[in-house]
Image 1 (cartoon, rainbow, N blue to C red):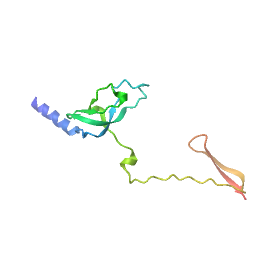
Image 2 (image 1 turned 90 degrees about the vertical axis):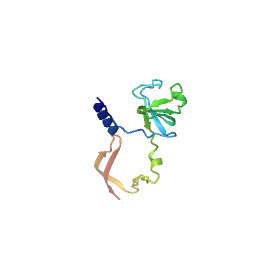
Image 3 (image 1 turned 90 degrees about the horizontal axis):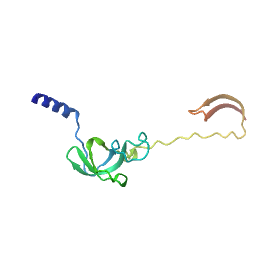
Image 4 (image 1 turned 30 degrees about the horizontal axis):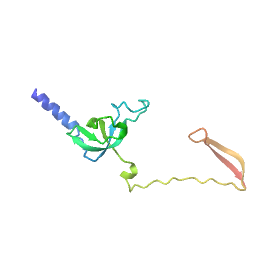
Length: 137
């Protein structure tokens, strides 16, 4: 019996990572057990937050500072229902360059006259069309 317990413990330890949360970290709380959120259950967010961790209760529970929206809930949640909050990409990678948007200039034909439409194509939607034309000055 002890061999089977040791085997199960070894398997658990290999596949299980201990939570790395600390007091003051921002986390998201799962909304699976929260029924107070109004609206369709299918359309509600799977996590709410971010909330600040105010206490750790062992390795399996975390106490968070609850907002007024969830004030009737107990502030302690199991680690399984907690997910670390990732800030926006711009805050996490401040040195990353933003890609400038390239806007193609619209040609003004001025004195040119369109003589023939050579090709007509649709761009992604049916409403936007692109025309290739031949012109005469």
